[in-house]
Length: 140
Ligand code: HEC
Image (tube, rainbow, N blue to C red; front, side):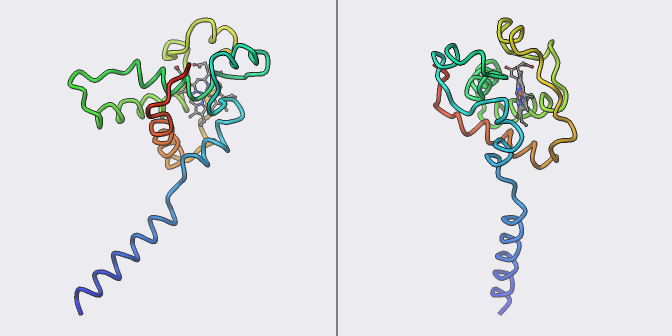
């Protein structure tokens, strides 16, 4: 009897968190995709340079994930620090923080702050999405 109640509670809770969970891809589509294309080759970036508003997300993800190296190679710490950088950059982008190459920075300018346009949950979800979306996908 007790077991059944506990199970029902667990399912109830699970259902709730599922309902509230924010989908990082939906956040990307609604809040980032107007500037950052999802996945495009280097050659197509060069061809479409005039139309692009920002480096594609595949480049952003590779740059940030590649530049941040954790001394003992701990994956959880890497995700944590990469997410911290992305989350901070969404609200407080600055020339000195950007890992973008100088030519791209000159072409696009510094990203306008998106502070106030996303909830804390959306920021967290989109940072997770960026980390996972490009696992094993290089910008080339
Ligand atoms: C109005 C256009 C615009 C929007 C909207 C935008 N960005 Fe950017 N973003 C840029 C530009 C331009 C750059 C490149 C210059 C720079 O690094 O600041 C950039 C750079 C970045 C960088 C840093 C890359 C690096 O190598 O240092 C991150 C991280 C980033 N954007 C994430 C996001 C996320 C996540 C969203 C959506 C929540 C988003 N951006 C929305 C224009 C935008």
